[in-house]
Length: 397
Ligand code: NAP
Ligand code: MG
Image 1: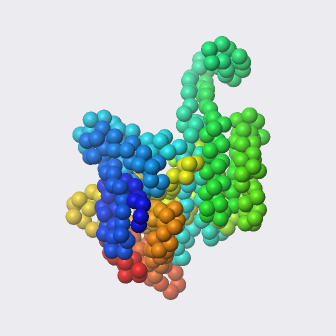
Image 2 (image 1 turned 120 degrees about the horizontal axis):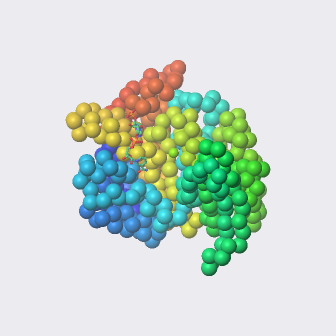
Image 3 (image 1 turned 90 degrees about the vertical axis):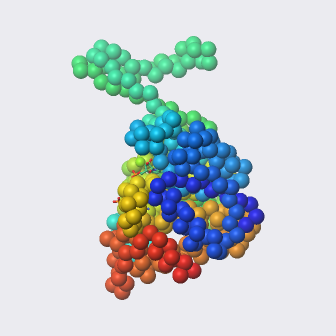
């Protein structure tokens, strides 16, 4: 390696898995260079969460990061870890600094059946991570009260006013949401760039027939960005961009054989990524990458710190935690680093490691979460411990 990866360590069972992956599958084969940031909750607390910001800034500087799952503290964690403050979600902080889109893709292995029969290829979800109902203002109104949308100029002078509703008997609720042209445009660019990098067609669905200004703006900006910067390359490669209504996309997705990038508005992406992850089998087999429009990448697993397994581990009990998504975060980062540096042997090693992990599962060696999903006429599934599964992959290499 010539350029270091930004390495963001994390919490609980995934911190254990992180160390094992490095010891068993990476360090023996790679002259690993990383800039290490400890995002474990203990160190975030000690540094007053400065370390998260430093790690995100390092990613901007070096270009590629790999992140372990981290605890997002709630009240219970504040007590458990004796925290100075209820620190914010590290992923939220990192996304705010890197301004990106989150892409989630399932990892497929023969024998692990999707709940949707036809889904032979992965469906990747691209979720817009800004605005809509996630930054909304809401209120309740009583009978006789009215709610409006009011637009003012920069001095606060009212320019336009539209009645949302005048509430009758019993009152009701109302909600104000927004998005920005700039965020939608950078979302569109990162979706089309990512699709090209993976050689995937793009499907995008919204509800422009009902939402003639809001959702229609998404449709228009996507169309513009596609025509201007991407159409020629898509056509050259035999790829395409499909825009249709969100309900139509859902129906088409279920009938499809997979193999496309499904672009979702924020709320749709929240819902559909859990649906897609579950349909393909296990959270332990779902990767996640944050791609910023400025060519910066942060790779991670889509699951959390697997707390329940960690307490078993602390008790000295044997665990069987699926490390595949975390391993693919590492291989994704190594591959991307290799690509950017023209280091073909690093790219080749990362690909080999991915193949070894998949072939280990296909040969019947897996962690407990996959056992009930595995179906094969010739291979019998065997449950391995967290560590033995990684050692089995090393044998395969
Ligand atoms: P979780 O860690 O994803 O685990 C939920 C359950 O899913 C586990 O108890 C386990 O089920 C199963 N599971 C998830 N990943 C697995 C794996 N790799 N192998 C085997 N089974 C797996 O979610 P959570 O329990 O809701 O959250 C725990 C902590 O993670 C929280 O503090 C949360 O803040 C944090 N979190 C972090 C991120 C992130 O950093 N990106 C994302 C989500 C949550 P069984 O117990 O039935 O075996
Ligand atoms: Mg969700």
